Length: 98
Image (cartoon, rainbow, N blue to C red; front, side):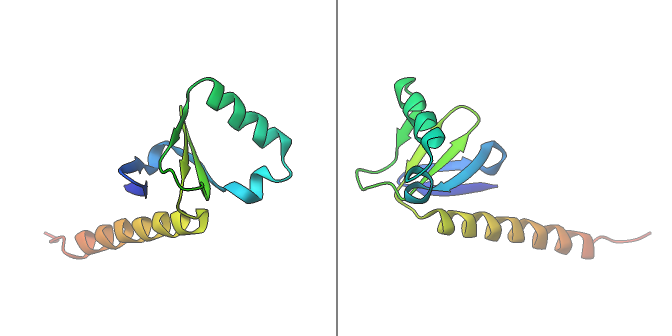
């Protein structure tokens, strides 16, 4: 399943390692700030919007700064997972037994 993370960016949930609140995790966490600085230095950061980032998404090989709140992105992931589950249930319910 794919999650829209802002702008023209859509990511497969298979590659998302974490979704984090930008202000909450960078305010007091020097390890997080160091990680983000290193990713920026290695050109592994995509800034989705010129607006201030509200969250960042860590994937296998990149970090995305998103203008969308982390809670909203989590809700999108949960909704997508529920939709997949419903589709699986429907297809199971419509199977014909012989």
